[in-house]
Length: 248
Image (tube, rainbow, N blue to C red):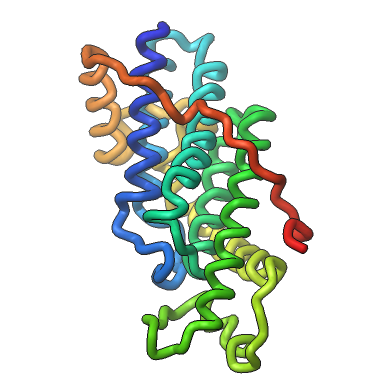
């Protein structure tokens, strides 16, 4: 069981890295938010694969196993953020912030039955870190002459009035934008991708899920014989809580 958990943890970490760092998005110049990206759904497919394996082999351990892995996933996001906040995540514009916040809420909604108190605490810390990074990045962008940077459409357009007036953008402004996208897009995206994640809310036969999820399951089965690596995502990262009054 321990060796299987190590394999699962490594798969989840790899999926998290692909989602956050290798999905082709430059977070400082992110495109307009149009919904949940394919990369987010593909990340969930890794958990679908684990769900299928544990459900078939040891159903009584399903809740505990998924709880451990979901907690590890959020801790991995935190770890990756801090490892890359001066590299791939050195800048996070309003579009990028809103995109990540939408997808984190998407993950939380779908995986809600498996969210432990520690996972929720880590998620709150991650949201706070993203808010702080986005506030700093957007403020720096406002202070940079327009011809020195590439303009992206979407969330940043909603901040154009503040830019023209030379005002700074507050955390509350960014939170309001993220909440607006959530209210407009989240429910529709949950419905659009329901078949991809139905196993988390009901028993769903593997032959009814998309081919990409089946492929993830096959990859998972094949990796059972591979050497495991250390799961670095379990490292805790101390971060202040996420709140509307986080910054002075």
